[in-house]
Amino acid sequence: EVHLVESGGGLVPPGGSLRVSCAAFGFSFSSYEMTWVRQAPGKGLEWVSYISESGQTTHYGDSVRGRFTMSRDNARNALYLHMRSLRVEDTAVYYCVKGSWIDDFGQGTLVTVSS
Amino acid sequence: DIQLTQSPSAMSASVGDRVTITCRASHDINIFLGWFQQKPGKVPERLIYAATTLQIGVSSRFSGSGSGTEFTLTISSLQPEDSATYYCLQHFTYPRTFGQGTKVEIK
Image (cartoon, rainbow over all chains, first blue to last red; front, side, top):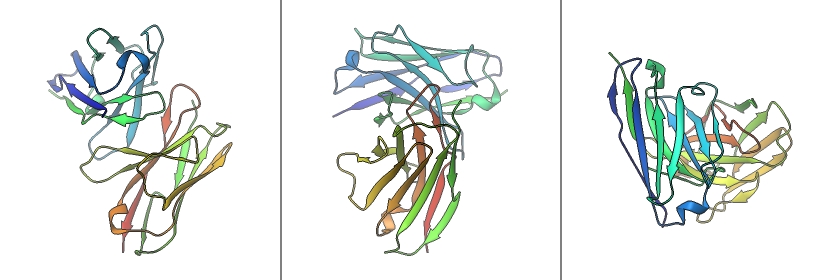
């Protein structure tokens, strides 16, 4: 059974940086593309970023491109999202997602950007 | 970027009703569209991918249709547990994009 566990969320001031992580279980992590999706409080789903199986190819949404970096460590079955120059509007639950077609969601980790 | 527009944004229907939600894409996305259900306080779950393929384990009262720029999600007989917000997602190109969501309530 696919199990995705996010961690690293928390409170960070505007302009700050944070790294959120995702531990993957129950599938061959290195064989799958991965995605981050976020959801601001009371709002809809927003696609954030994508990474290929090897980690060599990434794509980003317009609102985070240039500020967020997605990476992975296939030896550790781990996925990362490095966020810098954070803005109040980046406040959201960040979901780790299996696949580029959005197969399975983790439970999410809340990132709050506030002074 | 490809924009997805869902209609309606919200609706109310009775148990047993047939419910249809539409998702329109700003460009041709072939059949590369998925549908997701999110119940209050819960994680989203995929219902359908590639426009018409039902996710394993999802009730057969859910169905998807369409191609190109117009797609529909149909619930054949609405049940109380279907009260949720539904989102479409294009998986044709990057960046991926979601529709704004359709909130379905039970009368």
